Image (tube, rainbow, N blue to C red):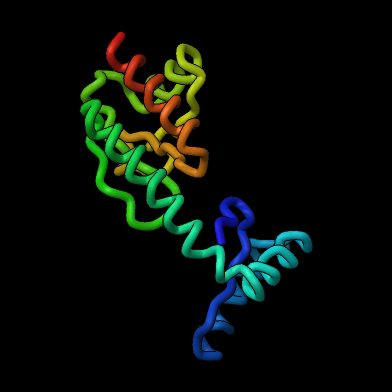
Length: 150
């Protein structure tokens, strides 16, 4: 239902598994904000007609970002889950932290350094495509200009 960042969800499992999940949950999460709970409830009750439209829109955005990143030499596996591409930026000669800092400073584009996701994330950045086609296109133009000028 495109509720990215709302941190709301539910689980269906046998009672003994839910019991164990609750032990972890009660000590790591206070609660989902009330507004997010109501929004999720409304999405579950009446949001199904929008799901196909949203799926198609995000698929178009995913294909645009993924295609552009690969075309400019930043290899990226095709995303199959969330709203993110995770391109390998080692060909630029910059660390993921340097890449992110310079891209923000020089081109005003925000990406997240891959190292925040663990050792295997080093040399990558996370780019979000939960934006309009126009915004993604502009961001990709700026990323391409940035790596061309390195």
